[in-house]
Length: 223
Image 1 (cartoon, one colour):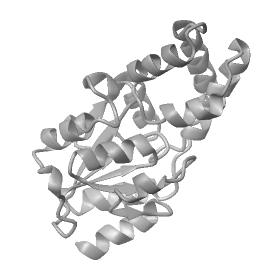
Image 2 (image 1 turned 90 degrees about the vertical axis):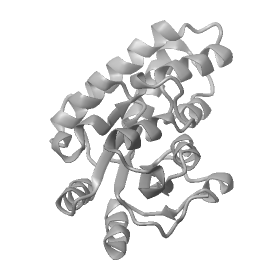
Image 3 (image 1 turned 135 degrees about the vertical axis):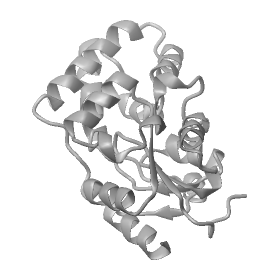
């Protein structure tokens, strides 16, 4: 069992919906592409797929929509996503301030995002966030076999920083992400974005915060 009173040595962030305010963008892109392909029940699909890697989404999709080709749908979803963010990638309130606080105060900072490496690095560069992270601890969905809710992506980030998972806080907006942090024996923090925590997920949380500024205050109090 995780020691909730252990010191914090590292914070590992999800990206979309946690640092970048892009889950709403993804949802819009999902729906625009779904309109083209006549995909039903998209609201449930968006919830179930949030936080998952592309291969895991493909498995889900092929089981739910066997007559709608995923390989044709997903490029259209990505087309709409890229078109929407062409004018800029929205960033969550308090993100820069929290990242700056962590780096200035000697914490390790990792990333555990289901988005692929090339897109993740492009988004981090465009939002001037790359230098806040321990470079080796930027872990993306195409680097691991088992995506969230499996713990692999968070464990790999912690391992690359040389930090015991028990000394890590994981920060997520998705249900699958919180499950992954808990399975990694880290302290899960959820900052809900599109999806509120279910009772099952709420029971796993170390903290639930309104925003990143509240999380910064919590970490500062424990320093």
